[in-house]
Length: 469
Image 1 (cartoon, helix red, strand yellow):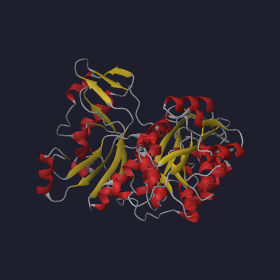
Image 2: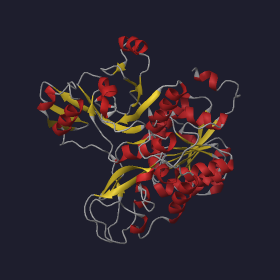
Image 3: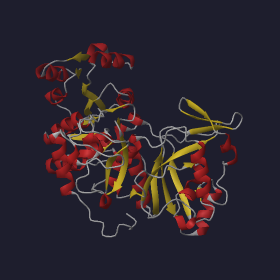
Image 4: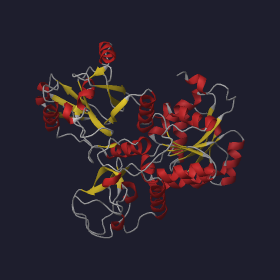
């Protein structure tokens, strides 16, 4: 559709946003794009390092004279009233000035939840970028938004929102969706000349891949051989599981297996790979959410950050016509893949902000439910007193393997992964065991209440654990 029509007739109102985690990479992409959009403007920006934030804004072309570091609520209010941008280190100062919507991008479960809750209860919209927050408190925050007549939404440009958009588009068209998902963050780039494969800045020998560039007659055997060839490279980033948890909540698609399949696959193979097992694919059941590692040659386009849906094809003539136009259709003609091979981070987020404020519409699901649980299993024996630190680019939790459980497979006392983050174990946990609420000696009380409340109000009963969703 023509998005200009979507916002036509909404007047000349300027949508003003607050932004937490304003010094991060996602935030920068939004701040870089904002000056190009006449009806969007920042009001209050929060980051612990406000001087670094100020320097970044100047680098992006913001008027240094209209950037003011503020230490108190009166100063924040006065700065915004004068038409300048308030920069704050304390999240509690965000509410001191008027704005329409909070973009929460800290990645901190506790801090992000507190800021989102404060915004919603004050009658302000929230666009949630911090999937760590959403995976614990998203259902409760959705309840708060409903109760206060505002929008709680994922943010366009991030993979969860992009995938939700693709899924709802496919559903609107009546397509029979079998699987949905995304690629892992970094492609596997195989160089036939050297027999090596590169993932981001790591290159390892993998000469076996030269003979595995096509699926062959047994796709699952080929996928297993590819996985064996790249065992030196990491798969299964915690962030992937977290993003798919958000998607499950908003769409009802759920994991086929708790560690996800993570097939090493080429784009043109997606329709064959994400077929049901009786048709040669990896899926035990339809309605799956999953992640794959994109395998490509050096001169082929990237899929890193992309999203996909795999559908049953229906009319064979229609889909053979589409195959002839270059679309990805399985070799047996039963499945097809539709995909967007990109995400543009905050460059796309303005669409969510304008939609929430001007139309009261979220970019995410309209009725999020407790379809899956992002949990964690101990990678090794963890003695009482172990601190489950969270850190790194993918916000891993020390000693814990992220898993995504279908709701009926999650015991009632399962601890969500990012509630466990930064807590201390009150008792020993054996390798392979799920982290439970009872294992946590000092779980954040507000986050725990949000998790419990959200699950209680939005639990969905799946009477058949092998149903498609």
